[in-house]
Image 1: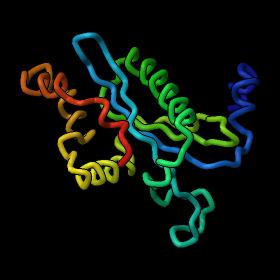
Image 2 (image 1 turned 180 degrees about the horizontal axis):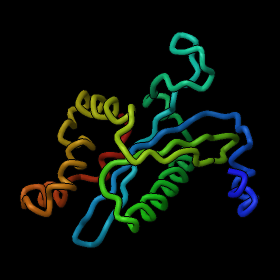
Image 3 (image 1 turned 30 degrees about the vertical axis):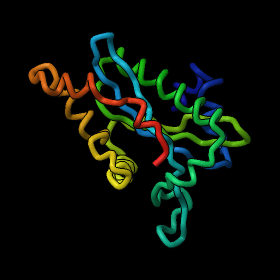
Image 4 (image 1 turned 45 degrees about the vertical axis):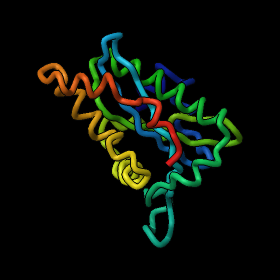
Length: 173
């Protein structure tokens, strides 16, 4: 860390700053399409952390609230989605495909990227369950993730991705 801090003092000094605000989480997926790779963020959720009923650790993950996230300023959601798309573009250039997630801290309308999770997150299962309750079970990120890796060998998976109503993953749950 110290060597990195010497080479990049401006970037790493910001990372050490404590930011008091609320934590946002978003699922996303990188898909291979006929037009190239595309990154698609889902609707965000508010991360619940540090609840004494859940853990004695003040920043422990306790769950996600998708309904509270519906009250987030749309400009803030757009800013978060833009950051996810940018990071997804970098990940795609490196060869990453499929699902990933990102965590953000928000304070006074400013968004700070905190973590990239190149995997299924705890919020992915809850998001999928809520989409199923909404009657949109076919729109699960799990299915898109699987289709991404099978589409080269299975024409039905390719068709699934091509027909998928991708805008639906950003609709409130």
